[in-house]
Amino acid sequence: MTDTSSPARDGAPDPAALLDIARSLRDAALKAGADAAEAAVTESRALEAGVREGALEALERSESRDAGLRVFIGKRQAGVSFSDLSSAGQKLAVERAIAMARIAPEDPYCGLVEPEALARTLPEIALYEPAAMDEAGLEAAALTLEEAARAVKGVAMVSSAGASLGAGAVAVAASNGFESARRSSRYGLGVAAVAKNGEAMERDYDTHSARRFSDLKDPAGLGRTAGERAVARLGAGKLASGKRSVVFERRLAGVFVSSLLGAISGPSIARGTSFLRGKLGERVFAEGIDIIEDPLKDWSFGARAADGEGVACRPRALVEDGVLTTWLLNAASARQLGLPLTGHARRSLGGPPGAGASHVNLAPGEASLDDLIAEAGEGLLVTDMFGPSLNANTGDWSVGVAGFAIEAGQRAGPVSEITVAGNLMDIFARLIPGADIEYDGALNSPSVLVEGLSIGGR
Image 1 (cartoon, one colour):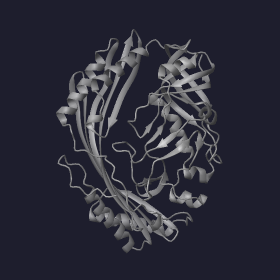
Image 2 (tube, rainbow, N blue to C red; image 1 turned 90 degrees about the vertical axis):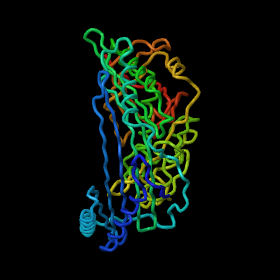
Image 3 (cartoon, rainbow, N blue to C red; image 1 turned 45 degrees about the vertical axis):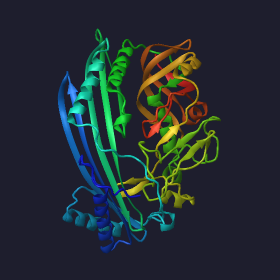
């Protein structure tokens, strides 16, 4: 898949120009003695405006261009990443990669994907639009964020408010015949508010990102939400320790899907370091639970038509009716496990690919957030978390949280300094999804209810 359209008038990166560099690096490596080689070149440009107390505080532009080269000599491989893309810089990178490959230990599973397994005809995915805002527009959006947050009664200050836009491109050229170049755009809004009552202070935030300007949320609404969330946290108390039902609100509930993706990564399975090893084809979630990968969705984060090694990506259910259907394999782990490729290689600039999914969604249920709280009865609503800990071998999981007590099926007062713990196998089996999903990230989840978690409080 190659986006060879001309550079946008807003100065966005040109994928065709990056592809020329990637081809040059690949060819130079082959000429220098590599049996096989792949090169990737990335470029990003961004503009961000930040405000404080009703005035522009910072207007920052950033640009970067980086490259990675991976070479193979027999069953030895080495890679380098670098940002000096001058002729001398490229020459030095090729020489270093070749020299390292000659002395690297042999890896029986390394190597590019076989040509017959490469994607040849790929769908176009809409990911880029020319910038629809300028410096003045970003400043105005940031000011709106700050003004809306400050207008909430109880908010003492806004610690940050900003708006950004950016564009990026990546190009890949490999000696097995795979080539790809694509470009994407991004807009972002973010605000953090601080509420105060006497000596007590609490902070909360709201953010949103989108590929298209038209999909970006209203900054006034984001600012108001950040302020209201901060004020609601004032006067936090403690919660008694014990076993309780816990509701994780939407913006945090993706932690369980993320933990699943790490546990079904091909390299983890091949190393035997996953608590889900041996669970392929078995029910690990409750009946009716689906986790869907949709890598071809226009304007989504995480979308891609081919994985990091050139294998076609396709929509699929990673978990269907509670049953785990696949590992996330790159070429090396597929060879080690003796399994077919799945299209889940994740490119590492200059290094061996990892493995990961693209644009994943926990399918929503029918219950609203209020319904989940009512079903919890006596428990905890988690609205913030920090310091998660996971034992990848056993699935034992814990995290520090803050949120609100749930009493008689209703949200009650704020609570903090709490630890929630459990085993992910048990959590997966008891997880109940709500209906409030929003498809605005690379990983999306509705709020979820999990019964019988251990609560460490007072």
